[in-house]
Length: 173
Image (tube, rainbow, N blue to C red; front, side, top):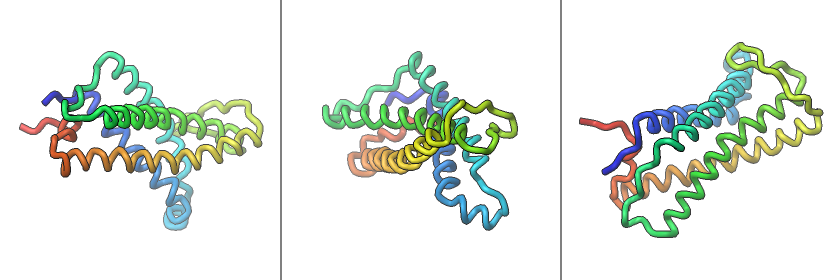
């Protein structure tokens, strides 16, 4: 079985971990703020910018290192669905951080990436508010796409049993 390049797999799992952290920080900001005494949104913004950069790196890497082919048993509709979901995931991995940047630019607070100042875009509060709504609803759509992606991987592993998931896991000797 052909595997993904270790760099591809590493970028995948690092991005996946950061996206799960981003979702948790967004969904549980208020309870975290009560427990910790500070908002988690600054960390959310820094991780979002990191995901944007990692996604650009992943796309550049992918242009030079093709994904292993799907198993021969994968039907045309499944191939199309896999392609569409991956394309949408990449779109959200780029689009959500960009929307977050626009919404933060329209707000009153300075922006930082792990303590390093980031310039804001010259956008109005109304543009920032519109970006905020798109960011929130896009986040929910991203959760749905991730659920589909994970469900498909588990379906291949435990129902179809084609060991497709092993292509993205570290090689175990």
